[in-house]
Image (cartoon, rainbow, N blue to C red; front, side, top):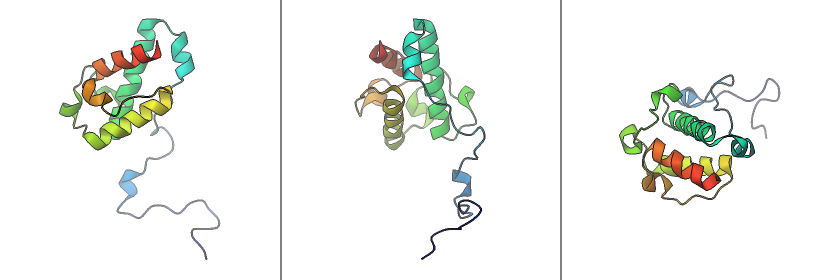
Length: 123
């Protein structure tokens, strides 16, 4: 039984789904080094968290880039629904290695407020 091409790499996605696949070469958001964050001065750590958070949200909501998400953006106004909120929570837990409540984006409903909360969790 043959499941995919033997040579030449993976088979491209069906044309209906091609727009959902990111090209490798700049589309992926760089990771966050939680250990390095802890060595940064407070203001730099907060700025790095804010930029990372805005980037993750931009990726999830298919915005063009980090700058499309304001540093003080409110999640509901951006269109972040409950499914995306759980996805964001899971991504943050993985990146920061800190357990977060399922309601984290509703308890801290803007980029700035969530940044402050995450900074306190790391400190």
